[in-house]
Image (cartoon, rainbow, N blue to C red; front, top):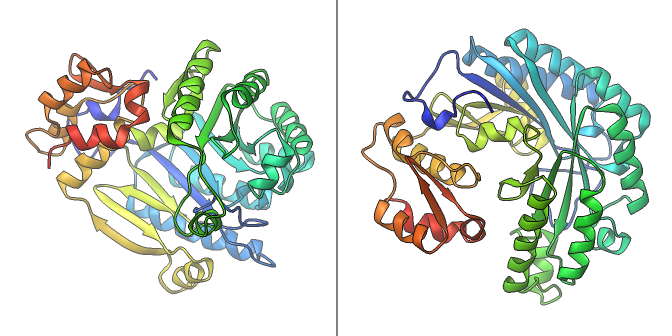
Length: 392
């Protein structure tokens, strides 16, 4: 990235600072048992009503963030590929009208293999989407069934091939550290993934999140997570194999060829402003945290009543903002500059450098000039690293 990283800039607010836009589509065909995202299954979705509500919510954010340069749009969910391409086009066009867009604006849409086909991919590309993130999750039918996915391995690979024809940039997700995963099985899956030719992979360890069906099964003794040491070995294997293949980890779970990193997600991790619209969407706007109504029906009612879907709008204290920036920054392989972050929020310092140096000696952090970064070993236990270095 040629531009100056956000944590190296001295002031808190920049009128001309780049802006990312997140649009949340909350609907799915079915709810996966591991998913704790804000996703909902409905018998029918009024596409025009939702298009208009999202456009109104977007217009509200634009009025509060004038004069910014739009560098990325991300349609997340839920399953945004269930949106009519016309609605996607309308939102992209509206965003470009509200803000001047970068010449190389990145426009990503998440898709599931069972919810789209060749015609839909072509229409989404025509609507302006130039990067697709495909939720393959596995190449194995038995694992897909365990994960509650509605597509087969064959359908997933066919969808990927079509995506690579239609979009200049494609990423796909896989989930590993399932209860029966071994180094041999995951190594084979990784080899297959790396041979498919995409410039970006999102590789997530299975976690049992509260409120999910997997959490209920675990509580009932019907689901047992993979042993922590075995999961750690799979993570280490992942970082080694992707780096060797030229797609190193630039964030804990994300791997890319140089230049293929998700610019939108880097905006989050470098602690820049982003507008979040749609049910349950979070945003960070001029020192404030924003949250939209999660339930789709409540979101629609709020937009009809107020012209936006906001349910929470809360200023971040300098300490809260600095803590968030530290957490986000240490997720990245590039790390962050704690001195610049402290100065940005008017604080003396945000980390204990005695602890930083101790963790550097143990191989969990590196310290280069003013920057600190977690090593692969440190990112594996990032919560513990943060607990040691962050000042209260």
